[in-house]
Length: 380
Image (cartoon, rainbow, N blue to C red; front, top):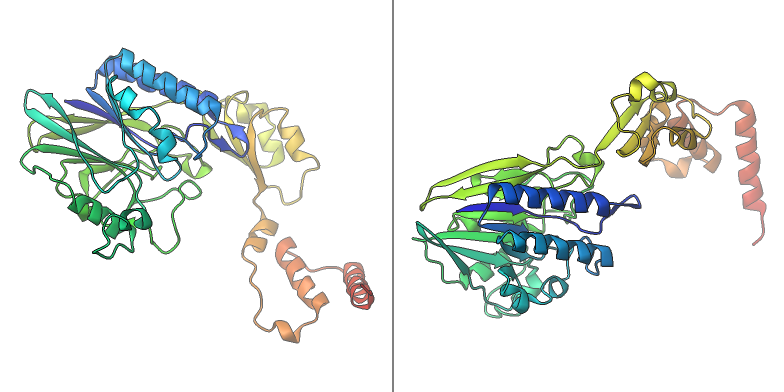
């Protein structure tokens, strides 16, 4: 049997206040078209269906259309919630949707039961584990210590009856130790407190992971993050987005492949001086009307009204910054350890020099001394 594995749709997401809903509608349409062409038996959606626990109307309507498209193709759907979702909202109408072969994991209640599909090799058991936190799982296992995410997942899996001789698929939305994250994309707790030991999933033939935006496998080929269908951060610019295809034969016979996803609006970084970026020859190969653009200007001096001028060419500038000696010096600035030995004007002078790559001139120093003197003498 063939499966599509997708995750982290983040429907309704905005990137720097730019709505992604049109891009999301387009990419879900392309996934449905790939499903029509490749005829998977089921599609596995591994969490973060929505970007917010209270999704927008447009996001809910888009998911509804996507499920209808898949139902019209007679493709089963298995969907879990992620850390961005409200599990109750994602699972609304789950009993009714089950009649249309759309299976949605409800809030964890201490039990997990598989749904079984069949092909010429026998049964394939699909297990769905919504995003788990220790406090939730702890309620159902008072006799054991559940103080970490790994312990929570371990406890949940200890309470299932798994037939290891059969084929088993687990859909799960957690951060498995060793995964490579995309800076600025995922919400991962500092210090590794969300880490889950991947060996806990050894009994499953395929583990459909969600939560990490970069497509990758963890340890073995059959424990995979499929990644997001769209780029949601400029740290993902160089990533190739895709649908993961899982072809499962008999026990132990699994083939993994990817089908590329091409967005209607690309996300790209454009770097150079102001004059370079405004040169027609420079941007000839860029869709300046549609693409989402991150501008990085390398001029040493600020161009007056640069952003407004650049928007005359690049219509969808999502972010804008300078990268030059001044900004690099500012990024590397460190607070000195002898603060108590320096006056406020001296400390301000150090900050000015670090951020501007040169010290203040005499007139500027005099202005700063007078300013601080006035501050100290002011009566509040």
